Image (cartoon, rainbow, N blue to C red; front, side):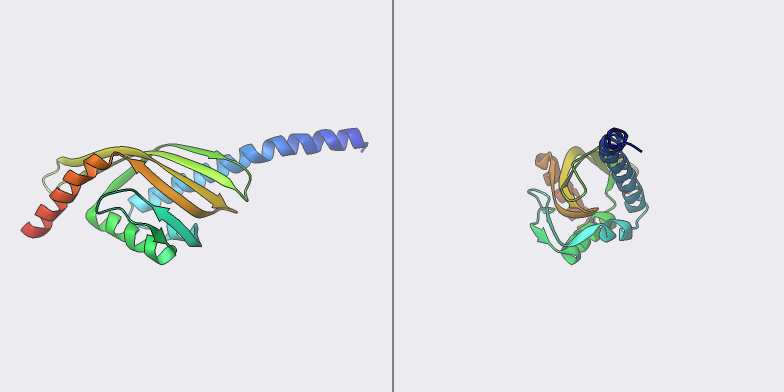
Length: 159
């Protein structure tokens, strides 16, 4: 095979790899989020770097978390309360050693009588290194989290 042909193949593979990588990562995170909605956070925890940094904003849900164990406790609270996160779009860009990920989502909580007591939408932006999340931050309407906190306090007091 002549060098020009090798160069063409290398260029094609270079163009294809980022697209395939982004596609695979989107599928991976869709699967992880489906498992989370089913109550299994194991796949998510497996994709967190040991020194992950997570910052979700301002409310009782706000925290500046570092490390898998801290994020796991936050995720367990999310599941215990019954919040559901529905992915709308996942954007992936960059090489495997510095991948940027943006997840546009809707989340909600259904009350005990079947009514929607909380609805919000937002974006999670993060950085992954070799498929492990190193840093992510949540941007959503924090004014909607206040009434959610009040509802949860009332529900806990009534229980």
